Length: 330
Image (tube, rainbow, N blue to C red; front, side):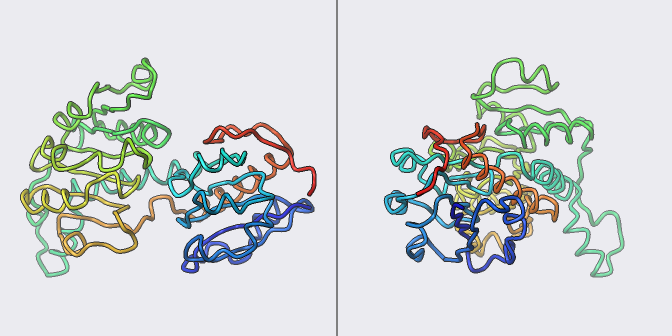
């Protein structure tokens, strides 16, 4: 029997029973839930854990990895792993894996939902209708979706799924992603921009689908926003720090027709007043990943990854350079 520590925050209620994890790892592991606000509050359980499943945004820094005398692997129960120091883990010989394929459909669906809501001005029309203004003209200016050009920043799993949905609406799809091999654009049937500036200046709608990293943090700032048309639309279902929030708030104020659909913001769950009060913005509380089925899928795949790590089996989702070492007891 090996020990699996599942780390989550006190404000989460996803994992009350750990029934999914215990079912997957039946007769193999002792699974324990640790609810803390940050890593400094994790007691001696870090030292005892053989494997860790990391939920939400409780960080695991070099300081935490230095305490992990028994740990054989960490699984981030999410796509993004920016809260984990993967290099410090590698230095300790601890492989870190994520779950990149859960919730792909949900996030792409959510991004399309934000696009439709902003193009069709659902929020404004709903408010006008409730005020008794039952008049189609209350929707304001609306462009036809068919033929509209959608720019995707990032063309991984979710970006590709977003492209397929947008093409079904008859949109023209173009992406910018320097890490995607040549020819993928032709295989999928979309266009490709060679630079971010080219994409921003040529697309009225931009949707972000990149992880948070040193390369992507604040990649959408004042200069980039100025490239977009004054009535453009920005959608972010990726990470809040990809967008310079102060620059976005200034841009919204200077461009009353510009709109944004934000599932994620810097400093969440706190939302700065200019964003929370703006009628140009739709906020959806980091819910793009959510469906009852996707949560179960994420928990199951996280536990299955722990099982493969424990047996020394290949894991395709390792995100650092550490080698897998099968658990052979303490």
